[in-house]
Image (cartoon, rainbow, N blue to C red):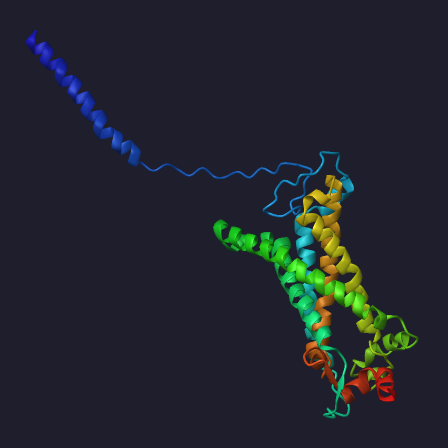
Length: 320
């Protein structure tokens, strides 16, 4: 009997000991990672809609216009359009300079300076201009970064990039609105169509250095036809960007989902157009037109620059 009890105790001790030894071994054994399966859920809120900090906008739960959803889908289409309109324009203009060359002053610089813009004009221009550059840069990250940047960085880094971009985008909207309002109201009288504008377009502004266009300097007043085109594009699409942007910044302004989706569509269209035109504007002022950049740095221009690019305005200045 004693032997049976001792044998039973030995069996129990052995069983507990084997479990105690096996337990840590079981915990230390690695487990295979299960692949993550991504499932797309069809919803009525486009992927680009709203801001990362506002994933759910407080809009009235109503039926959604399918046309708006189809316009916003796929999100990658708009991302490509934003990238190609901006960087594609840079490539085209760079190729143009290589083939055509810059627009030089025929008679060189005279050294005589003429007042063209006031100190307030220069200040407002740079307030709106710098804000616009920040909006374009952060807008590209918000609209296209998910397809171009996120795959090449960790999730934690991407969250930091997108949150910073959204914050800067929202912050820079207000100096842009201020600059836009002052520039449009103050400069609009000088941007009205004139009889010489059509001739300016026919001569390609005098910027082509080959064929029958070479050496031509078409008539222009204070603003030439190209500058007027940029101004009214900035005025109209800037208003579109401001209105639609405010709706996305303050979702309560959009009472329905259709209103929020329409705001996003208009904002994307405005971004494509203004982004491309902004590249042209910067290119003409800094690279293509010799002496042009000085106008928005000192507010003055060289007399020969005015004679070549704004001869009708120069005549008015001399008369006064």
